[in-house]
Image 1 (spheres, rainbow, N blue to C red):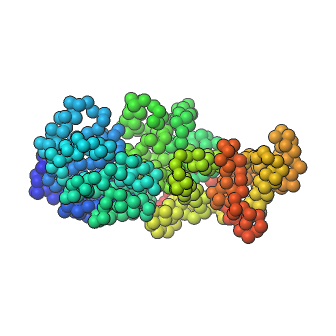
Image 2 (cartoon, rainbow, N blue to C red):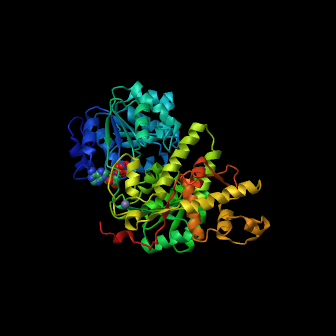
Image 3 (cartoon, helix red, strand yellow):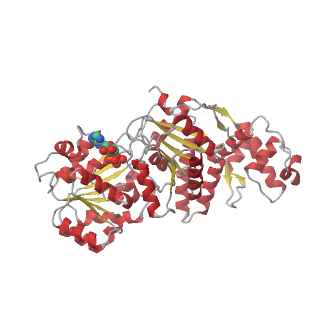
Length: 530
Ligand code: ADP
Ligand code: ZN
């Protein structure tokens, strides 16, 4: 029952017009809503900005009873409820941040049938008190938002989500709709299995975000690169800059502010008040650049984010896709810009080696990283590669860096052999091992103190690599790491090691293809033709 939609009397389209003020459903929304209104289960894979919310909000208003929305985003529940109340929908939430009186009032309203929608954090469903409460009211549907959190294979696993199979067991007649913006085959299958969605209709939307221009470039003074990128293409625009650590979030935000850019930091180490303040300024003011860890962004609905920049390599393609997907929800041209370098690869390989968990877990992290590296090093269209990862075939897009400025694929066998034989020699000569910097200095024939101290000028490979510049050599190391020809020692010093594949390269049985970075001029996202 609802103040805005009398039971049984409101059709989905009418609710869409009257409550939400929109003219028509988009994409598969109508079909999804029909499925749930009819009492069936649905699994919805739709990119960020695709319009997932209406897929459960409309059925919750059309069907009798209260729609229960399970969401991990406690920090956003207030905003979501406010937005619904603003259009006359009776929505509330229950989470640990409320005082007991408020909670009791929400519970009373639910039991009395006075709510259209009730938001719950997944951990609440572990409590018997919550389950008993739900038994005392009338439920129209369960919506499981951010459903990929149930997938252990995915990049954002939350153990509390495993409990959600209880929904089907305890309330078998209530339709469930699970929604996510993550769409790899494996995650898709895992969501379906863990949530026991055997009879659900699956709705897989087109994952392409044609208005986002994807660009990935080699790191070379990342803060200055970022500054040039913002100034030349997104001056005064709202954007998000992702960094891996809290420290680099703060350093980068400070740097941008000094350069006159309205930047704010956001990470889990800031107190709740500061986080809430910065988030709300980002949402409400124009042209704020949020510098953040990945703690920021899930569920943030700001349509005019013009760019998402990554100053560190994301850990997975799923993460990259979700984070970049926060740009351009309004459909206008936007940029996804990533700077990545050798240190990123080394650091992430080291983090994987040192991570807790079993070999299986480390294999999973490695596979995620390898897919991300393959996207960075591809000479093909980024979008084709990205969509291919999500199982969708496409043709070159003309709106990514590799389409706009095609890199050359060059035969890198000889440079690779020079580099690998240096690694081998160093290992043979003495116990001490060396990282990429020293190896490149040797190839370039530099007489640094560290070279002379170790008598590296006497190595047969000293100075044989002058055909490439230092930055090009770093690119070679990076790509050999990405291709698994080189590895990083878990010693924490970034020592380079050769792998079995390296022996094949050295013997000439395995050719090496390398990506040669094209010269790139800054290219405004808005000036594109398509
Ligand atoms: P998602 O949860 O998939 O990221 P949202 O549900 O937040 O996407 O929707 C993204 C934006 O699109 C919102 O601003 C929403 O109001 C708008 N939207 C969704 N469906 C429609 C529609 N049928 N007509 C117009 N706007 C829509
Ligand atoms: Zn392309």
